[in-house]
Amino acid sequence: MNVDSIQNGVVIDHIEAGCGMKLYKLLGLDALDVSVALIKNVQSRKMGKKDIIKIDADINVSLDVIGYVDPGATVNIIKNGKLTEKLSIDMPDILVNVIKCKNPRCITSCEQELDQVFRLSDKNSKEYRCIYCETKATP
Amino acid sequence: MRSVIDIVDLTTEELDGLIETAVDIIENPQKYSEICHGKKLATLFFEPSTRTRMSFEAAMYELGGNVISMTDAGSSSAAKGESVADTAKTVSCYADIIAMRHPKEGAAYVAAKAASIPVINAGDGGHCHPTQTLADLLTIYREKGGFNNLTVGLCGDLKFGRTVHSLINALSRYEKIKYVLISPEELKLPSYVKRDSIKSRNIPYIQTTELESVMPELDILYMTRVQRERFFNEEDYLRLKDSYILTPDKLQNAKKNLSIMHPLPRVNEISVSIDDDERACYFKQVLNGKYMRMALILKLLKEAGTI
Image (cartoon, rainbow over all chains, first blue to last red; front, side):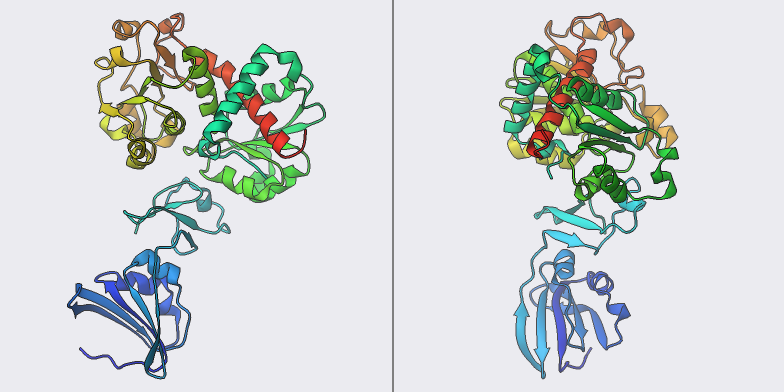
């Protein structure tokens, strides 16, 4: 399968296969009025299979969101058809308004104006917990 | 502004300092009887509580201070839809310190972020209840003379029991503690509590569903109530609520200096026939709770520069 190269934009590569759609949604790419390609299950020598997202526009993507979904992903910035920057990704210590707490007893369930804030509680297991009620974030 | 939402907000040195103050209050009450003169504690209780609210109020009165209360959330501004943050900001204009209980987890954290005076979490749903842990610690200190070399049995609802999680966090900071975790399969201690407070510190523990078989090992037996309000499913509650009932015959093999504790209120987990046993400490916990709340109010008001 071929997808055209982009001239100016962002390529999120080496996304764990199956995580591309989640990342697409959490980055809010569905709301963008630009060309976006989500390519699933691309053959990869290193990973076996991977997902790729290509955004044909010079926009800022949230590295925190990418780090939360898949810290192994890579972000390439393309300008005039050339790779100009490779951004390093790490799991963010704090996630603000990316995911919602699902605990019905959490204060955020009844006070909607509160920011949804999660803290990285265990890097090894990629575990995030709500800062209000300490409930573990679930996909 | 310094607030106390969770027991982890207090360092081990601070816990020791609070105990030291509480012991001094017990030995020299007159020294403290006017120390908060002219200062006000606001008790904001968004859900019913008898002992905790009264304990805070008694604590402030014994420090010579005054109390203003919101005891019925149904007739307060909260019923009109006011946010916790706005309530905390408003009450900051009237009082010097807040003790707050709220059914939603994290509510005290929100209040503390918004308030310009110290906030003490008096219970936020099933999440934290740090002053109960302070009461537990003073009780253990007074009964055992310290916290090292103790085998602590925790029995009942170890999953939703917030007092258990906080107590484990506090006791795990001391040396040669051993835990015996006694619960039904469905109410076992959550894995993250085990990971963060027990395993990470290489503290020995055993998990069991049997109370009687481990009884002879225990220095402390901390009983808990299976709380109806923590269950989404009434059937589960009914099935599990009578899992452990402590009766005199179950204490036959217990140590003579065992300390039997319970955060109260109890339903039927401890038979009233045990109340006269000198090993029963649960009403001592209530009294110790007041002294520790006095010590905490003093500490936070001093840090805020109010007294």
